[in-house]
Image 1 (spheres, one colour):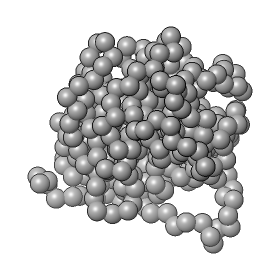
Image 2 (tube, one colour):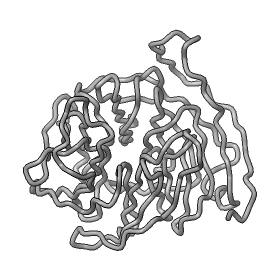
Image 3 (cartoon, helix red, strand yellow):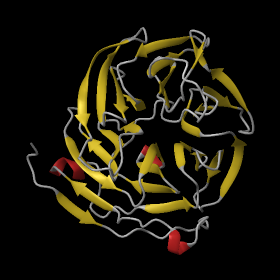
Image 4 (cartoon, one colour):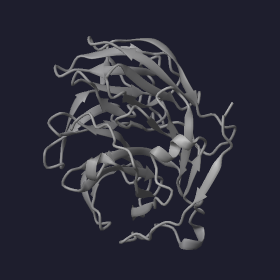
Length: 325
């Protein structure tokens, strides 16, 4: 039960500095819902300003994913339909970096090298420093190909943690691993299975203190939390929260956490904001259905959101937890 009735704030979007042309004629473009901040509790306004404005940074993509903000003030963006990874700049300019089929979630490692999940390659890859080529870090577990690695984060121990659902397994490809797992990849290339409890594991994130690992399940439409141990193992998996609102307006996807432990999780209609104790504080409704998000900007207080054909940015009044800073 919610202690407070929903309160809704409707805000106008700031026009983008540069608008990339959409591939389809305007009359065929999908309609976009209004940007809204929907508070379930007063605590939501500790994280968001009532007059916050959503800015369109760039649009005209196929399907955006994997945002990672760089201190040089650009955002890495994967495009699953155009089959490229771009760098997107504040004025809307985008620079094509590397071409590969169906790139997905990304993160930096401690050396600020871009790590990405390459769904069609069925691999976790690392981009070169110039962003023009890549190295496969892992593509198998116990001799069997991964399904379609989806999202990846840097762990408290410096290892990489990633999900491997079948959501993007290419047509005609055979599933070799007989489950959808969550894995740990260390610096030596060793791959360790952490759990196969989830039906379609997708987004994941660590708590700021490194004691918990959150993983969402796109099929079950919920978020699970596990206790994380110094040896890189997890235990005590349990349901943290559900994003099943009875609609078909989206499923759990990318996750980010602020320095206070609040979760920002993609869900139906936008970004669902959760307290560390599992209370749904409110929702950031976005014009297009988002897939992922990243902290950046001054004090890591800006959310960069990849949503269908666009990249958006939204100021908050909290500070994001960025494990590679």
